[in-house]
Length: 168
Image 1 (cartoon, rainbow, N blue to C red):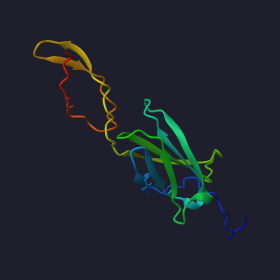
Image 2: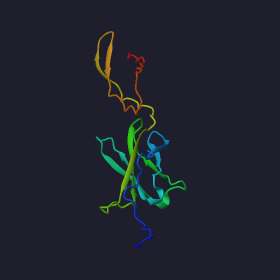
Image 3: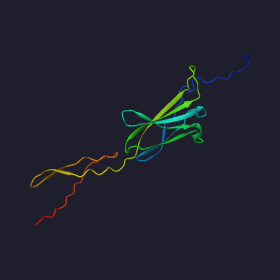
Image 4: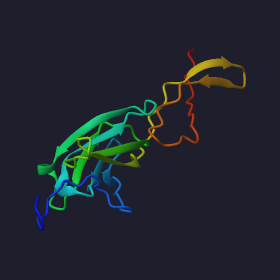
């Protein structure tokens, strides 16, 4: 451009020094579902937001949903429902924004943030039927396979007996 002309340039470093990036926010939860949301710092420059969630298999993540800019709410928040989770477990959820910012190397810029959320605990399942492992005149020893605790801690079991009728 000539003297006095202003050239419009694409910013190469969109995040101002010291700016805060909002973390993923928990909106709702149950024992098998989390609803999360995230508002990127630059909603007008965000094309999509991809939500990923850990699978509980040693830091492995799975894609949950990619949300287009058109599906964000009026405040620029992207929402995602994550279903099929286990009760009483912590899950790491990442939100990854694909933006239109193009740094000098030409690639699209990605911004991400995460949150850690826990599903509600559910009532523990019933244990398997006890099996008699030994017996004396004054005692019975039983064993059983402990049940799925569903995110809650089992502090005791109650064993009930009933008198057997004697065959005559």
